[in-house]
Length: 195
Length: 313
Image (tube, rainbow over all chains, first blue to last red; front, side):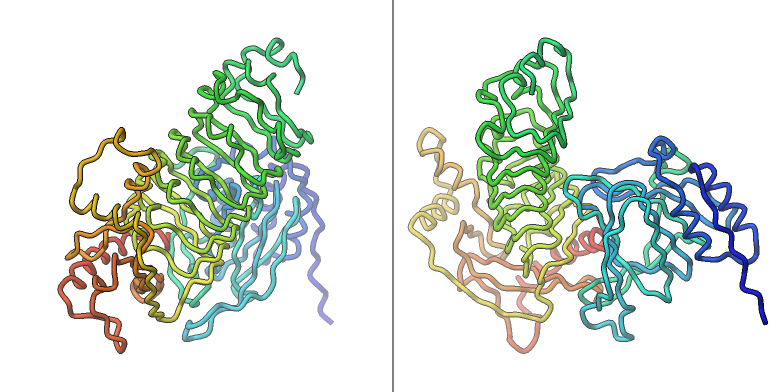
């Protein structure tokens, strides 16, 4: 009988420690989704530790690279002003973890559109993620839209993508048509990226 | 707010009283000569006395730049607010507003206006008279249509319209050359081709206005009441390039679909000044062979290409 894979239950006591443990986990050949999700959730958000990465833009949400994971993963902080939201998008065959550091984010899951892509996309579910919660998605689960629906509070989230990717598809909710886009970083390692 | 505020902190520049249950702000605010940012979100403001009496005449009306009143109980924009001439950024998100007052145009320096999460049903064309407006948020309201005059907001970089009741957009939206962000999701935008010709005959005021504009009848502000001077400035040009006409409120509406490379079809409302002005439109096909039609299509395709980048970005 095969032994189940031993997964550790980690507790990250700071953002620095979280990054360190992530490097350790991703140095292995096999990584458990549950292990990473538990680790991300275990970190209790402390703004002092991430404020330097949390650069907001007036007009839209920003992506701020925190750590490039030795090429195995990208860890970034997303800043969402009031009312800011993303398009419906996929994750280019990668794993995506999203942890709320401040505020709340609404995640709406969608089914992949049919081959013809002619018709309103089907909503699967929606939920509001609270501070310190961590969500997980990959392409086999579906597509999602993430938005800060608050008109009074900004939101900050911590994202881990493995393997890293810089292009994905965005989808028109009304028709299912997709369009490939390239994603950019608003800042990297705390420094504003000049275009 | 404590009465001694301006005595204790005469150099105060930023005041954040958010989430304190505040129901009124009194004259103790008015004698803070350096105050440029006032954050008072998530309170119980909205009734009379929410803003200090005499605000319009106080130095604060010229020094205040940023005002955040989101998450309160305002059911209308308080008139005193419109006298804060120096205001650059105003947020009234998450309140109970049902309308935007036309006098919003008094806030000449406004760059950032957040009105998301209210019950707003219509947008006054006067909103378009804010020359510095860069960011306009109208999401999560009950808006059914966008006035074509909104295209006069030359500085607009970002327009948030998601989660409203829009079925189409005015064609003039393509003229917003600096627009980088436009959100439209969660609107019942017409997807199928719809031909809808409606025409309400123009009022006497409209007919007089059209004549003044098309015949270039000279007038000076001293000749007319302010309300008529403002009315005349709201004239829109008939998009038919062969017609030099203008219209105010009365026009023919046709929905045309502008196709962004077959991926997005935005229903854009074309306003024409009269039924005689409408370009020949066969019911069988969407394309027309008239010259004026193809001229305006070229113009539209340049603007459409620009808008494509905005929508898909």
